[in-house]
Image (cartoon, rainbow, N blue to C red; front, side, top):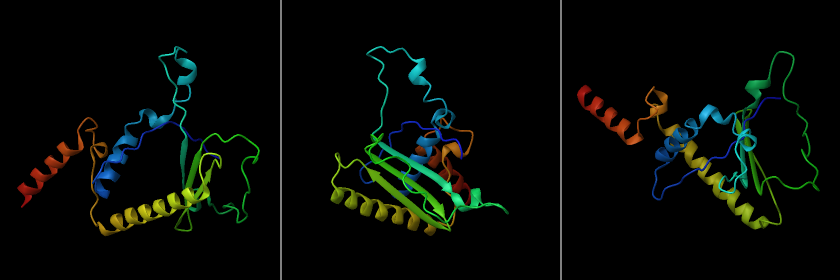
Length: 178
């Protein structure tokens, strides 16, 4: 196994936002999480239990497991070809109302979804998954269409620089090169 840090994040989507802006904004937001989320769980025990201090209990879990075949395959060991079955009893209380888990295996992105049936209707989840699949495909298409890498402030030591400020710098550099 491996260690996973769990922490809440708010993913913002702005109206009329381009795919490129959404990718960059999400990347920057995730990179601003202190210590990649390690230590968040301890806050529950380290902060006072005053009414003004509210601990966040997310309703949605999103877990990206990585590229499984590249990370766990060695000369002697590799991923099992057998389904591991349920990870929890169906009678157990759901920790999250919606649980999404994704990984890349054999160059294919695999997404699984479990949900609380008392919170969502199956048709709603099917529509959500179809929309999510469409959005993921549009992101992949967008990324494959770009030959050059697009940088954001966190790619440099300019973490306090805003995205539009960095874009202005790159525009000025491009003008000087022309």
